Image (cartoon, rainbow, N blue to C red):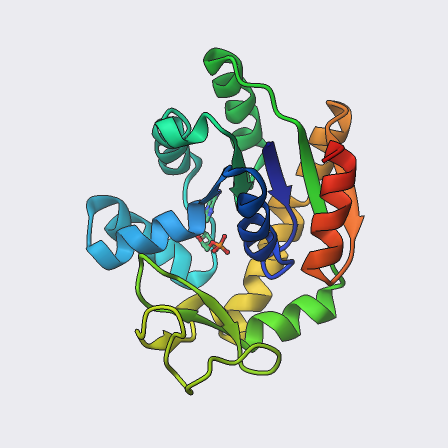
Length: 215
Ligand code: AMP
């Protein structure tokens, strides 16, 4: 499957993407994960992106398109891909349309996961992430704590609160989402590709996607 997952930070895009990868081997491509990996590895990309990310601002479109142009041409994307956190601005969406045309790739749909703002805010404040850039497993101290406090179940690394998941940064990320990313729903609606799914349960969202795809 070839999907774009739209929705605010904390809407569940990452969880839904991981569940979908198990269906047909399509790969999850999370620009946030790629950028956090670059920050940890101390690459030029990471150094350039870190300030924007810590403030909850978007990284410039040119950096993101550089990453995605390469990533979408890697072999593992042939089976399919789930774009998680990209595109995030209209210029990114326009550049993606051009890139996919150039590569001869057709999207199945853009899924907009619609979750109320108060639920999102609460989820992000209580979310914790494995600090190992190869793992980045997600936990929630209220609803999905690790078995041992502060330790990742999957790889044993420390679980931390992301710098951009303080209340102040979260408020700013949600405002940025409303201003820059929410208009993408209209963009994909205009292309006849948008499906909006309202639901706070990832299982319900995945079932709805499967139904739309007829699988
Ligand atoms: P995420 O994990 O998707 O919430 O992304 C974390 C941060 O990475 C965002 O707040 C942005 O600073 C940056 N980021 C991730 N994806 C993008 C994108 N497509 N465009 C611009 N910045 C991005």
